Length: 168
Image (cartoon, rainbow, N blue to C red):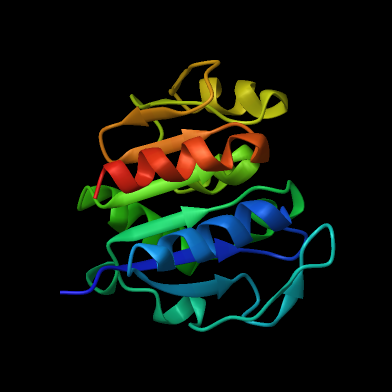
């Protein structure tokens, strides 16, 4: 049975944190969908175009094995304001399905109220947000805590995706 992943972004996402997992997961024969806050095509910080393949209102935990949440400051800030995204991420966590965040992507997980008791990393500028959510912040290149995989920066894309794929 084919595995399915969804990458959740918003306008102003970090280009490589979207593009790298988009193709890397497909190399593993994982079907990848894209959900975008606002359900419209958007550009990343550096101009990468992204088009949604699924509406946020159509995100259902039963349809996915993995959710990937890139950073980019503006992108995850927009995504965490969408109730359907937060509900979906919370359902994925409740079912212990893989959740991968990088950079500011953890903002979405924080807003979904799933970080309490977890160990994770993130962009150094938002570590207080993780700590204040009840998470144990670790200053590492990648942190795997059960079904939750996190990384702080796009320079860690390869380690982040390797750790995620090892969890499959």
